[in-house]
Image 1: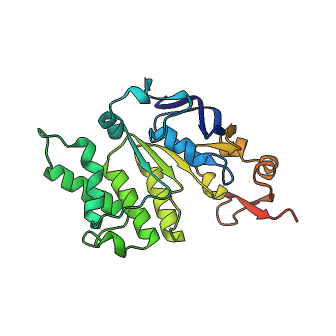
Image 2: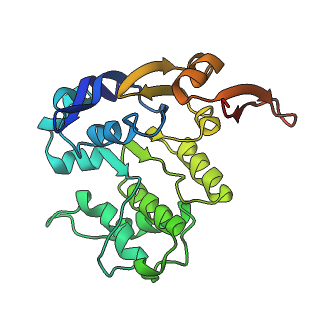
Amino acid sequence: MILEARNLCWSARGRPILAGVDLSVSEGETLGLVGPNGSGKSTLMQLLAGIREPSSGEVRVKGRRLAEMPRRQAAQMIAFLEQQAETTEAITVRDAVELGRTPWLTPLQPWSAEDDRIVARALADADMEGFERRSWSTLSGGERQRVHLARALAQCPQILLLDEPTNHLDIQHQLSILGLVARLPVTAVIALHDLNQALACDRVGVLSSGRLVALGTPEEVLTIERVHAVFGVRVSIVSDPCDGTRLFRFRPLA
């Protein structure tokens, strides 16, 4: 397993936010995390990224405790796209994406033509070519999200953690980003609001009130009964007439 959470817990001011989460992610797998607002998705992502220290339990990367790894080495392994990542700095799009190369630079290994190539590819993959000289302050929410994705891609991680990566994106770019992640030779953990998007993941974990209540393939986990119980909606499963893809249709309980 490339990434593991063992009895992971986190509390704020004595209030448990995440409790006893155990999960393992295989190399090359795409794991989706779903759950209602406040279920602990973002907290779990921050713990997996090493942004927060767990109250108890541990995160392991390739068998090593994340807390004991040098920060530089951890940053070479894991890239994290936060749900709300902002900056007050007066920087350009190119500056922001170049930050992804920081873990790989040393006095003995300064910026090189290879770094230029990696940054250019990341910008192209995130559909941000031609934006290099644009100021961060002039970008829309969706454009900023794509820049942050490009920065994460420029990091060349083995593990990509994405907290609601389709937030602020139009439908075209939502499909483009999720398709790109599926094609990348990385292990991905993606927190998602859209259950239909989660159906495309290899496995899905369902969070409710800070606990991981189900983990398995989308067909095993995202059942009508569980979606109703966790999300508080009526749901039916329909088949796309174009290709037979399984889709959810939601209705309020009232």
